[in-house]
Amino acid sequence: MSNSGGKYMFWGVVIIIASIFVPHYIEKTITDMKTSKENQKFNENLLKQQKEEEKLATERTLKNIQFKKDAQIKKEQAEVIKKESTKAKTGDSEKYYNKARKYQSSKQWNKALREIEKSIEIKPEVKYLQHKAYFLYSLGKYDEMIQFVYQYIDSGELESDYYIYYLTGEAYMKQNKHLLAKAHYSKSVEFNDKYDSAKFGLAKSLIELKSYKKAITYLKDIEFSTSVNTKSVKETLCRAYTLDDDSNGTSKYCK
Image 1 (tube, rainbow, N blue to C red):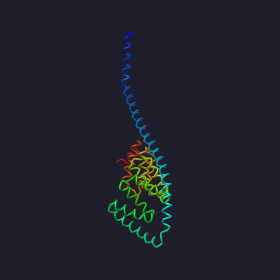
Image 2 (cartoon, rainbow, N blue to C red):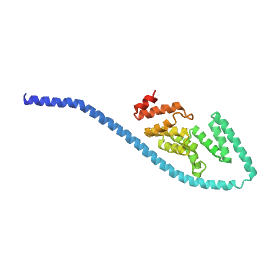
Image 3 (tube, one colour):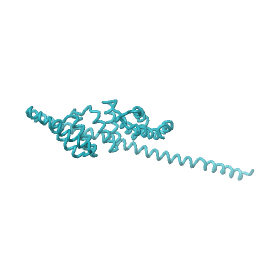
Image 4 (cartoon, rainbow, N blue to C red):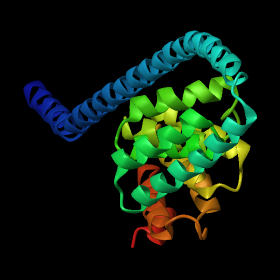
């Protein structure tokens, strides 16, 4: 065989090998670049939420100082009210509360909100505060709801109220602030580890934060709970297993 023939054969082999491996390498490089960009975007969003959480914490501290001053003034004013008048007003607070509950049953949220605010003005009991928070949430007034509950969390009335932390987590989920939602669901579970609605919310926030295995742990814990929608739990398990690329889990829950 001549030298020129050998060269042609050599370059022919090189071209064949390149045609096999180069497209695969290019495709893998493009995929890796795409994944890298997605991860970068996710990390940027996570950092943004962390900064927002720090900003909110500072704002709440300042608001708490003012709220405590206002609360002290109101307390001093309340002390001058006669006992007979206080008893009469306490009865009125229940009257407004019962009206609010009636409006709630027919989903007349604005009317319910007006009545519960009358109850709170007379006596800010926990159940009145909880209902106002729920009415604001039902009206889609998430920022107003969060600001309202944190006035009473910071002052102590709702500091360890697991339901309020759960509802705040729900509000943050509606705003796609998943890191803040996770923090509040976790606080709810901390105060009541049998509150399955908070565990479900926590699992959903973890999925959005790409912590699939942790989410699955919480979902498995409430899989047969009677206080949450079991169909929704199974559908969420299917999603978590799919995103985690777990074929065993998807074969069981994605039917």
